[in-house]
Length: 254
Image 1 (cartoon, rainbow, N blue to C red):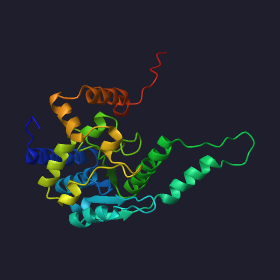
Image 2: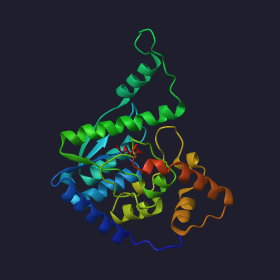
Image 3: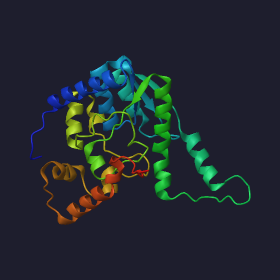
Image 4: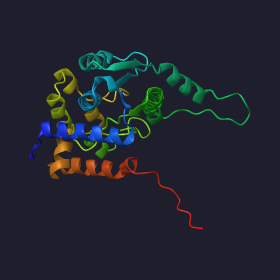
């Protein structure tokens, strides 16, 4: 990339910021993090361990039935030595899907055929509900694990993985987050794991239509060599700004 990034400085300052957040917004509370086995949740967890100590970090594993890469989430928990909870959301997911398709047999109620997008976004929204249940039962604050690159093009689920109480990685690109992971001493297999939402069977880059390397360069330097890719990124960015803004509300003036 065409700019300089000091991973040690970023890690130190981000860890300090996490400490300050907890001093002001939950002194003595625990950081509760959904652990997927991907780089973002792994690096966010490692950062919280650096800031708060491993005894104040709780990892929550939330497979939806069978998860092919659950071993990566387990590796992260073992590597950091943090407390862990596992909640399989499959029964809740199936319950909602079945209830949508088969409503109460009362005249006037309609069944709903869930769209592909609704089907894909339901698991992360259930997972966020689980995270808050764990958090409220363990004197916790929920970590948001999204990074700048994902947020830039709206690659997150509103009220799902885009939710949380504090967001340590939200101003770092994918490339920067990976450098921070290496600085934190995480296993390479976690840092370099091919990013995937784990929902639709495709990688992030397949879904986006461009690589994170191209996106990161554009975010940091404003340079994108391919006009079509630039237009695609700009379009996604503009359309998804609402995910990062407060909900609009009617300002009543009596």
